[in-house]
Image (cartoon, rainbow, N blue to C red; front, side):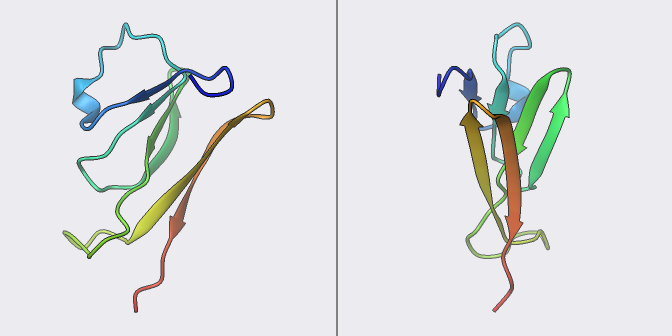
Length: 80
């Protein structure tokens, strides 16, 4: 729990038990950036900031969990 927000961290989104109470699911594995609300939960994947894989963008994520709310942002990094 962070500032009253229930965060669930998993590697694969498929591993989430839908009965688990949480406000956000933070996941990885696919390296595909994601920042979307589904059924009252934030599904958040920051993507990957390392070497480029599978023609996916190079990204990182920012997550805010405070009294103003729960929100995320995916930041696209320029290719060098």
